Length: 356
Ligand SMILES: [Zn+2]
Image (tube, rainbow, N blue to C red; front, top):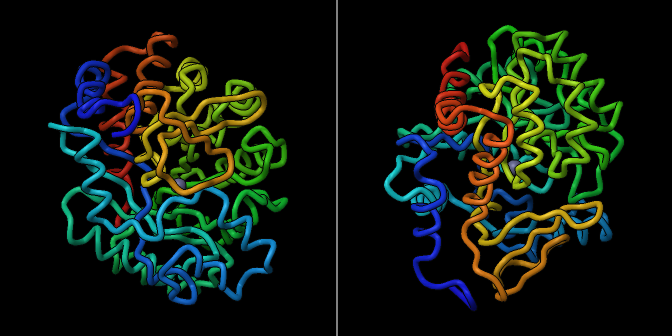
């Protein structure tokens, strides 16, 4: 630990502020794992990702600056961070690879499947989307042979340069139909600067959720609404939909959680982190019209990331859990329902997937 953060601070913070609210086992519904040889070009370093021939020079620069974490995050590190963040509890996670064009999706999916098969606490999702040009036969074979519980929807762009996509562009009709028929989980990071509040994004999410009611649609990062102003404009698109859940990864503003929990069944909220990002020590705060990650020194430079040792800080994972606890209290959610957010809700959802 550095600066003002004393040794053992995270453990004490967890013990005092979080543990009483958590069940004995936790399920983290949003985590990434990958190895360095999955970067296209087998580069082995974030500098070398720049050499990737897929990207024009200006795109390479953006890719490097947005949400940079590590060159690799193997499953062993995920297990280590999960155990460190929840001392004394049994950590479980929904895992998937790097869903970007910078990464070889066949390798990243195969690694996810292998890692999950070798563990008793991991549930794999397959990176899936039209840009990957998977045939219907290949999709079905890969899903059933590797025990995937659904898709992590592929993001066909780099960095925070969101193209004008809607949900319609992010999965093929066949991929949607297959998810509908088998009750698959579809974990979606909604596109565009306007997030779920963008009327075209919100409308496409609503329409496809209604058209494919068997699909279990999970909106990552609360529909990417990290700010009260965003969720207030976004929630109406999905508030009444039975087949739409929220994962609260990287959502650390209790007013966002409270707004959702007041208006949507608390059983549709899933605890999630977005590891490795949330392994950073610090907190995502809101400044004017955008989030900012306030972190201890030593992490890779990235857009909207401010480093300082002039504070005490714990895992961002802990700040997410704290936002859920406070948001639930503001919304009048019972302590039993709060515990269900970190285990039962997600396990029930995974258990309902028809394995092929
Ligand atoms: Zn993620």
